[in-house]
Each structure stands twice: as structure tokens, then as C-alpha cells.
Image 1: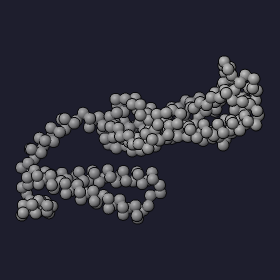
Image 2: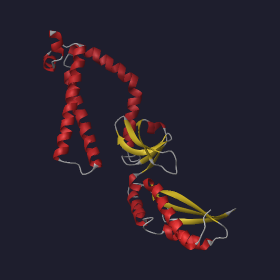
Image 3: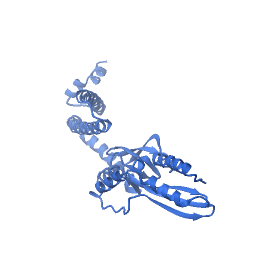
Length: 289
């Protein structure tokens, strides 16, 4: 009974100069539990005293705080672990064996983390596609990053509300497609077909007018995003204004509307254009196929 009471008493274990491996593990568990409690209390008090402006500020603040606590805790834990020098060779041997086994993946994860934070990497808020998985980056850790998965259907690209965790070394072994949050615009295409007998000139004029409507496509915002992106990247998008292509096909005249749209607004943009097309074509008596 006395031995059990000594084991559950962290002060007694800390004052002991000769500790067994079991006592060392118990002391480490106490230390980690104390560190977690202090971290949770600190975050709660800090949020109460200085409420974050939005979720992004809260996320970044907690992430930095968590990293600081881990670093401080690891440094503070070393003297506690190695205070029992009689077990140092055993501990070092076990640690060495573990490092040898897991060195490859861990090292690659650290290298991947550095690449992610490099000039050609990505950051929270960017949309990426890797290994056939598409999603928005919601977290980047030292060992892995997390995506909010998007539907694989290219017509919708809506969130599935599922989180996908990928090790950082994935970006080393696979190709990564990135759409930067700072330049979240991609080319999209919308196709419309009308009968040969319809007034194709009036239809073309209506479609050009819809694409030039600033309430549908904000060209000033697109141009500003391109200028901002060109400060860090050598970007040559060429013509960024929308355009309407026409092609005569069997069964009718096909119009292809090509325009830049925000990656997270593709579906809403098509809905806005569709409503305008139905309204304008209905008023002009132009039929759709």
C-alpha cells in the first residue's frame, strides 16, 4: 500500500534520486497531464481577456500557443527524464532503436513541412488536389496537414464536411495542384445551345452583355487579385476578360462562355449566369436546346 501511495505521489517521485523505468513513465505521464491542464487553462483565460476577432485569428493564436507549449514542455521534461542516470543507457538504447525504425517517415514529414511553408508550398485557406483528393487546407502541422474534403463531382465541388489527414511527406511523393487563396480565380466554361432558326446575333449580344455585367463578374476584383499575385509569382494569365465563343454544330449553334471565377464560387456563378440567360432569352423569344 505504501508503495502504491508513493507511485501516485508525483512529489515523492520527483524527489527520488533512483527511479525505476516504471516510475519514470509515471512521472512523465504526470508531467504531460499537468502541461495539458495548464495549456487549456491558459487558452481559456487568454480568450476571455482578449477575445479573437474571428475564427482565423483564434486558429492561428491557438496553433502558435500549442507549439510553444510543446517546445517548452519538451525542454522542461529532459532534466526530469535523465535525472536517473542509472537508466540513461537503457533509455538511449530504446530511443535509438525507435529513431532508426521511424527515421524515414519522420524525416520526410519534417522536410515536407519545410516545403509546404516554402515559396512554392501552400497555406491555410488554399485549395489543393493531391492523390485524387481535393479540398481546402484547414490545418498544417509538423507531421501532417488537414483538408476539408470536396465532392469529386466537378460540377459542384461542394464540401463533404469530412476532414482528410495526410502526412506531410505526401507532397514529396505526389504531384500537388494548388489554387492560392490570394489568387483564387480559375477559368470556367458555361455552354449554351440554341436552334439554327434562332437569332444567333441577338443571343451572342445578350451573352456578352451578361458576362460584362459587373454584378455577375467583378472584373476589377479579378484584375486586383492578378496584380497582387504577380508580386510573388511570375504570372502570365494573358487576357483575363470574359469571352463568348460560337460554333455551328449539328442540331444548333453552340455558345461557350469562358470566364474567370473564384474557385469557391463556381457553382453560385453558374447559377447567376443561368438566371440571367433564362430571363434575357425569355424576353427576346430565344429558345434553348
